[in-house]
Amino acid sequence: MHGKKGAIRHTGPDLWLLFSVVILSGLGLIMILSTSAIMAERFYADKYFFFKRQLVFVLVGLAVMYAGYRINRGFIYQLRYVWVGAALALLVLTVFSPLGYSAGGATRWLDLGLFNMQPLEAAKVALVIYLACFFACKQDKIKSFSVGFLPPALITGIFCALLLLQPDFGGAVYMAGLLFLLSIVGGTRTTYLFTSSALALITAAILIVQSPYRFRRWFSFLDPFKDAQDAGYQLVQSLYAFGSGGLWGMGLGEGRQKLFFLPEAHNDFIMAVVGEELGFIGISLVFVILGIMLWRILVICMAQEDLVDRFAGLGMGMIIILGALFNLAVVLGVIPPKGLPMPFISYGGSSLVVSFFCAGFLLNLSRRRPCSSGC
Image (cartoon, rainbow, N blue to C red; front, top):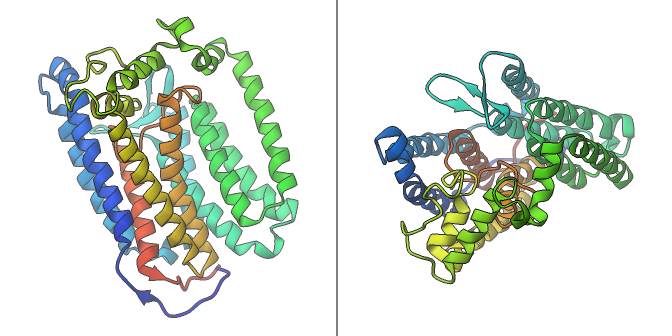
């Protein structure tokens, strides 16, 4: 890749980032036990059902994080087209094969027997690796439309098209957001970025207007209490949870919204229960930890001498940070509802394992720099 090359300097991992990941994943285990016990006991006759599964996911995630910490980054970069092809194949299987698992009116998972996998999570990592390599290798042509802008836009567009077929409108927006951020730091002309963004917004508006269900869901957040028993129900219950928490919260395990009032209490809306049981103090702690993570991500990326390492580190960090910000924005009613889990805290294996891999990759960057790979 373009950039300076030199001897690899071995240092220890970034402890601030490592401790932040451990604290968030530990909080996630505690809150999953708190939010899911009653539901697990009713439907599975085992109040620890979701907790035990999440504990397994955490252990797998820790192993994946260690692998990301130790792996040769050059190997990952050299196989960038393999990762893109594999991610696209998984999305195609999800939409067009019997392995696709449907829930809530969308087919976003692959049924692999013992567990379900959400290909979107793998697609995020594949896209970041591809974009990081592309922008590092094409710096001399990055201002060109046909060479510097069109290829990454087409690859991202294919990902987004497959996600819209599921349908996963929010996932497509997420992928477009990763492209936008990495294009900015990669040096793409702002005229290309803002023109394409305007076209994307027009397309999104047409898709929303043409679907009555999507229209109601996307605009119910503006006044959720107007349709509190239908489109606005989940957000209303989330706001009730935050309002009940106050400064110190009702106490761990004492929340009421998880008693079958708040859907997805252990998953996408788990932060509402954190606010209810741990209050403003608990939510503030999460914000502080996310702030520390963002700080360390920027420090680690700026310390890299190879452009591909810098871009890849930023992309991996944004997978975590953007996911957290989107999730918090949804549960607080700032943006329309979208099923995005809270990294390290929400229940679910795909998101958790990918978040651990991203953290491991960043720890790898903090330990070894520069990378002596080539385009």
